[in-house]
Image (cartoon, rainbow, N blue to C red):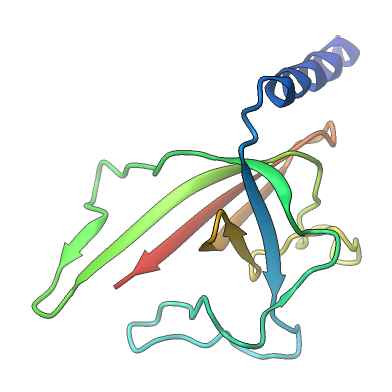
Length: 148
């Protein structure tokens, strides 16, 4: 039964690829592991344009599908403050390929870590979770962006 399931999942990804649903490109940037804590702004949000992040070889221009914004029923995504609006966007991104979770396989050169940044269609996102499937066919990222 398991052999059929793996085949079915692989076939589903092939169908998605052939349908042309991977219309976006994702690139992964990483800060050095010796860099200490990430740079944050006065509100504690991670600086997504720091100079110490560099492109990761093998993790550039990955075909992907960026899902619509994830809605949160318990809270608003936009907060109006006296001097500005703060906007939090949470999304999922399906990568066309298997990329292991860096927390589980830190030595793998194609591993993606939660401390990495994903640049998808020019937008910069913090990676909140890396979810590769056990059949090694694709990887889903939970990403977020915060703007002021």
